Amino acid sequence: MTTWHWVRHGPTHEKAFVGWRDVPADLSDADQIARLRAYLPQNALLISSDLIRAVQTADAIAGSRHTRLSHDRGLREMNFGVWDGMHFKDVAERDPDLSRAFWEMPGDVRPPEGESWNMTAERVASTVLRLTDAHTAQHIVAVAHIGVILTQIQRALKITPEKAIAQKIDNLSVTRITLTTEGARVFEINHLP
Image (tube, rainbow, N blue to C red):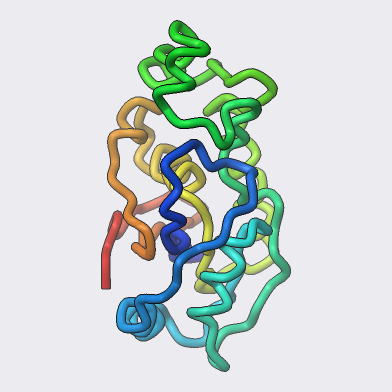
């Protein structure tokens, strides 16, 4: 049994699509960081996406009790392609039908030069499987992104992408999912310590 403690990175305060674009996290709320650090399991492995907002958040919650694994590109947010950095309104004006389909029928719909929901889910699932196999019966704290965490909720609960996207995942929240040979079990979603 491997337990994943998914932590969404600190806020970026961006008012636009943020996928693979590297923007920093605001980690100025020291009390919230301290509560999060205290809530997470001791002696856990700690990994993050290789994007700076996740790396910075992992650095902020790391302690001597965690074993740090290398940042992993497989845990990156969805690649929004040409939409990355654009305001949602501008995307809707540029690609009205495509942007509507992207949110209303997630799955194989993808932004220009970007990834679809299914492509992201497959990439993340492959990364999680590799890391779970390498670290069986461990607690893994993974600092990642909303899209990454939502794909894991979808996989664990066996729900549609539409239902997964409806879940709320706040910055610096914890979503805990245990993986066993029989399947996955979700213990908490969007817990704010």
